[in-house]
Length: 85
Image (cartoon, one colour):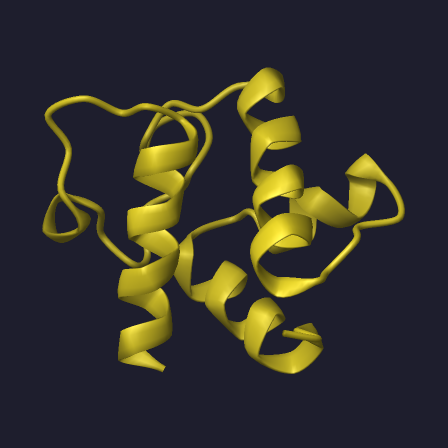
């Protein structure tokens, strides 16, 4: 699971073009939106595309994304449980 978390962090950094941030800068428990990384709704769309492109996971609606994109831990668990590739 730790490898998956690191992989997700790397993909988030790449997809969102987060300059000057490394995977070790992102706390697994830190919120992705608001206080933590400070992501917004446009970033949420990018994260949805990231899941589909890299893991074969298509989120049916944005409300589902709110549960998945809480933090790196919730994202990694969702990917581990639902990935098709």
